[in-house]
Length: 110
Image 1 (cartoon, one colour):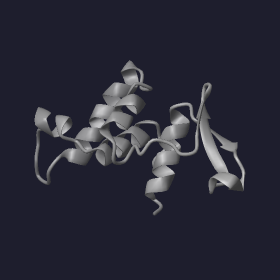
Image 2 (cartoon, one colour):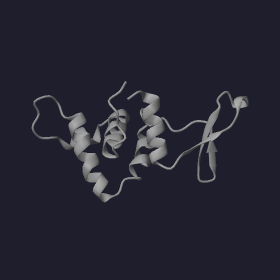
Image 3 (tube, helix red, strand yellow):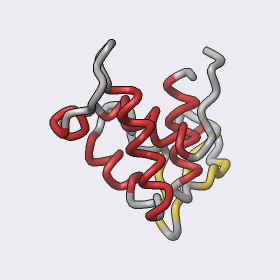
């Protein structure tokens, strides 16, 4: 998945809605969540804090699937068991991919 498609999918899964803002802000679309309006969404692929907020959208069952997906992403080749440090040190991009795979939003198209 392209990075921008990942960001949009995560934002929408977290309750962000796309809204028309016109050309005066340099973009045709902005985003809103609740009463908050923004012209861009969080940078989930590079910001661990943003991914932490996204992870809060997962329920208990989804967390089990999320951790399984994250383990598959951070596991080194030929490694049988995942180390706790690999979960802890997972990058925002790795967490974003696991999040999208957990919610069946990941597509393998570039």
